[in-house]
Length: 274
Image (cartoon, rainbow, N blue to C red; front, side, top):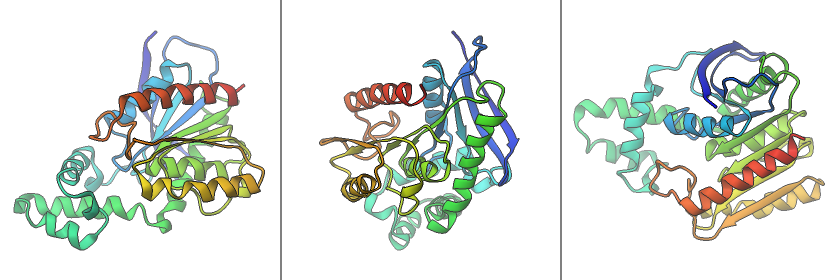
């Protein structure tokens, strides 16, 4: 069956939202929703393909564009500029990514025609990781969940879940703390939420890499906090996996672990939407 895809803009309670929608075209019955939450690279071709995989599995997949402001993406975060920034970052030491001075040193080694675009795009990207930005990103996600549950003709009245990667993995858990009707969240190598854990009403499934200590070392404390609050949290750690092991466009992609995690995710979602 064909997967139908489209970009849609809709009005949310917090702002106008832009998102990539994927669903099996000929199907007419209502289906549960999986909100696919992007990595820092945006709703790029990879995230669109991930959405299509979940659509082919029988869900309505919605990938909200977290870079769009009132439904419009700024030029510095355009798809072309993000691809250039991604190529640049993968060419420098990972330790320089989050160090502004080291990053600037690397930028100054690039052709002068490329420098300013890289600088603006990377400042915009890493600025999104600032906790002060999380509220606006969370607002887009809660608006998407509400739209899927109450308005979209293919999913109205059906359960809403989420699957997120890296930055999106962290936000998938945050969404569980904010959307009290959320049916389940899947976290791929995302930082645990720092607040709102008592508000969580759904199970959470997390996938992490043993060779991604900056993230994985935070998991035991979150696991303990979830247990303390009587919440359901299943943890899967692949000892030899690096960060972003699910992303098949990334140098750290691990096909065996990605396949296993996808199968576990489908089983988890099938259980929580019943």
